[in-house]
Length: 185
Image (cartoon, rainbow, N blue to C red; front, side, top):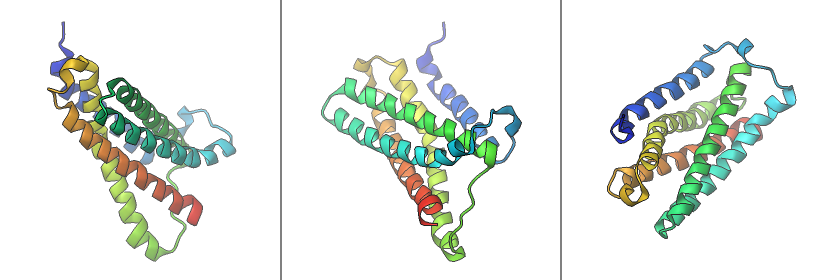
């Protein structure tokens, strides 16, 4: 029998590679759009707004989960972190679906804003999202493979702080990017 606890780093790596391959494949146009059913234009147009709302909900659930664990409410913390992960997966599926069908959204604002504000924010958002993926997987796999009574003796608390911070900043910057793409310009 395989001890999942010993495989957490390997599983983290495998899940990260698959996730990033899907993201870069969709953004880079490597996933043929003909493989997916096409939703009505109104649905495709609504996805960025839905994803901004999902991001806001994820921020709230992360912050509430942090508060719960600081108060010693492990059950509530676990529920909120699983909720956050579910929101993240939903966000990612919707994002990948839309970008596979219609590609990334072009920035329509002034070139100076694009160069000095939008692109640096987007780059930081993307970088943090990429770094967050293995941190989140690692943290969740530890939580899933150890009993609650042993989690405090693992890397889970430290990795969780890193994952939560990366997630919070990435989700927040994602909302700023959304505002710049769809609300301001």
